[in-house]
Image 1 (spheres, one colour):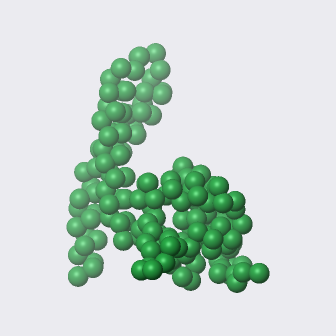
Image 2 (spheres, helix red, strand yellow):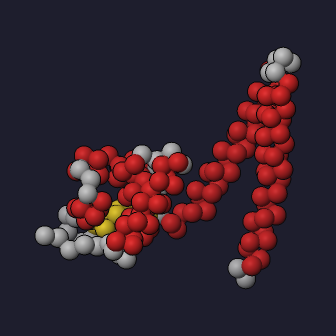
Length: 156
């Protein structure tokens, strides 16, 4: 029998965070793996520890880990002389993840403008909703730099 690496309280939190990540577009296994790597007492776990802690198949574990590595959500390392890979969340890259999200907002903002321009006049209520979204994205895009600067000022 393997030693449990997470408590029951941590297991509940992993499930809650996993559901959140699913709503963000992650597959269930990947969502739970990322949550596990953020919540477990040890922040570097082996393939078998991940698989056993979450009680998921080798295939689901492997597929999810590969996807998380490809999307730069997790990384792995090996210790000299060992074949085992240790996986950890890439929380040090959070600024890059935020930048990518902001670039997505900018792209969506541009697309939204094009969508609004081609919309027919026969759907005025829908068109107004799109304009409101576009307006918010404009505001958000304009305010982000000052928000970042204010945050940086609190870190000094």
